[in-house]
Length: 116
Image (cartoon, rainbow, N blue to C red; front, top):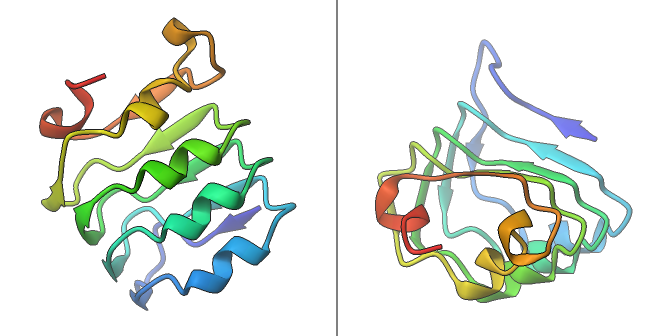
């Protein structure tokens, strides 16, 4: 697990595409930082990731449909990123428990999550 949430000095910068090489990563928590840029589609290769918390940062753009590759995901938090635009990709919606997947918690601003 990688947990960099609620730090006294927030992380800044972007998530490098190499994050996708951490194939055994189970949790990534970057809540309440100042991370910028788009959410890397390489996160979709993290098939054992169960929790992804990117809330309250400065992410922007569309959420990639490649994130639907996170087959073990049970929690995803992306709310509080005002420059993220939707809709939420159907590949992520398909992971929700209501659709037969394991994703029980999906928190996003309504412009994104209301499409699932």
